[in-house]
Length: 184
Image (tube, rainbow, N blue to C red; front, side, top):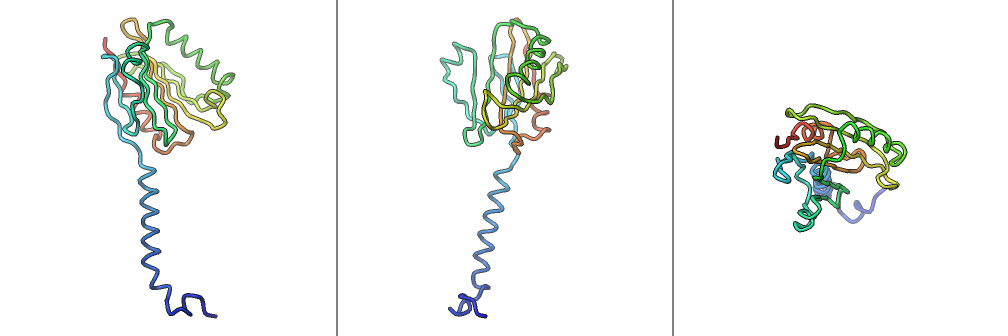
């Protein structure tokens, strides 16, 4: 039985390099798309420092950042959002921890992976990691929120990304957490 390629005088060996080229391009695209991000040290509000993933773009306006003390980053392609906030201290870390526990099941229909106050770089930091439905969304998201209090202000870092997002494996999240420091 002859195939179309045999009848036309062409052999599969002639197109093999082309197939191999497309396969190689596909594999390299998959590899680069799954790369783990690198982290770079950033300081916000002249006091709150931590390592931030390099695949984000700052999207908040400087005037709004100053007026509301909120800085926003995102990566629209990968559905990643980051919010860095400073506000007058209004609650303790223990109260914030309890609030996270109560909202996880009732409001976000989610599960908590971490909700603990840790000593990081000499400062108490609330580390909250959970997976749930952010603001009622159909898709599951994971978010990491870290809170620290210093000099009358509560500083918050929140990063939200799709569940099972390959670019932020657990060791990357731990590096972010362990890099947190505030002015004293």
